[in-house]
Amino acid sequence: MYLCSFHVIMLVVQGMILQLRAFMEFQARVRTF
Image 1 (cartoon, rainbow, N blue to C red):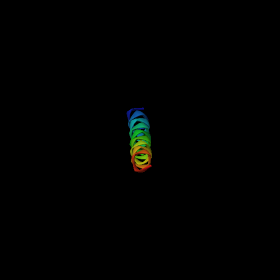
Image 2 (image 1 turned 45 degrees about the vertical axis):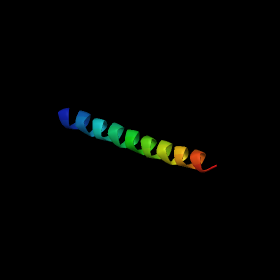
Image 3 (image 1 turned 60 degrees about the horizontal axis):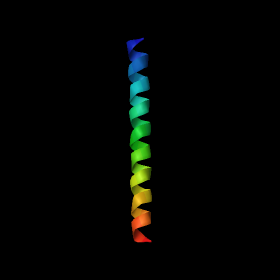
Image 4 (image 1 turned 90 degrees about the vertical axis):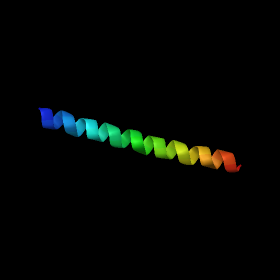
């Protein structure tokens, strides 16, 4: 049970990092235009 919740937390953190990276790239593109 604990291991499963830990894996879920890691997946959520990875998803947040991917979203943050995509948002930063989007901001960089907006600034160049």
